[in-house]
Length: 267
Ligand SMILES: C[S@@+](CC[C@H](N)C(=O)[O-])C[C@H]1O[C@@H](n2cnc3c(N)ncnc32)[C@H](O)[C@@H]1O
Image 1 (cartoon, rainbow, N blue to C red):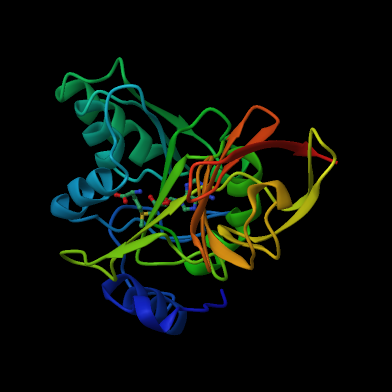
Image 2 (cartoon, helix red, strand yellow):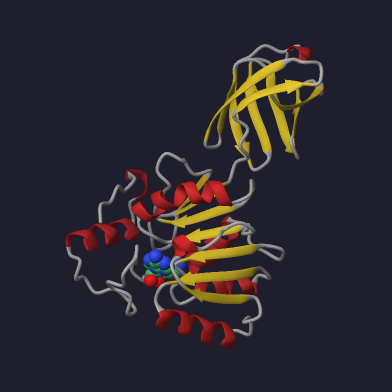
């Protein structure tokens, strides 16, 4: 397996990855070494990092969390303890059994479930939070699926490894790994927009970064505007302050620093 570690996220996880590349026979926890389709071995996540990851994603009641490669189930069980509906996808049947009995022991089996299967086959639509502790190649392979299937505003937390060119919205230190990284899935706002009065403007988007050469002229502002999308919200700074926006259905509502608003749809 080829690894492309991001230099800024070196830590235990990255070191483990490098060691496993160099020494594939290195013992790993559990019985998972070498299962066909396995994109990361089972490594126990420090309980402090489990809690930190869930806090970073603000997991709570109303959330639907999926842990892709759920190991012994600790993230799923901790999320269920916080009131979320949580699902773990795990290739190794012995870990699935272990996780189910741990969920029962914790009294959260109604909200914590586990599926034995390949994480790449899991439909992610409907999840509000996805957690990952996989190798970099697996994260990269998952990136288009995450962007395609998750709704804007869904949170992704990865232990140690990044998503390549999609920079995280936040990166915090972890107790025992290369850090915890958070992404908020951005709405897709790139392209041409038109207001009801026929004004056109163009949004350039790369992941959550956006650029507007010009805002609609009726707002009386001059560009360019550079900023970010966070879920359904857009914030971009320009010479006259912050232009904010919000996607509501198929309408983009832009608000000028002075309070003026325009509504636009794709054209
Ligand atoms: C580093 S462990 C992470 C466990 C858990 N998410 C946690 O953080 O405590 C990675 C897990 O992914 C599982 N895994 C690897 N490839 C998989 C695949 N293709 N489908 C499902 N699970 C997989 C491994 O068996 C292992 O349990």
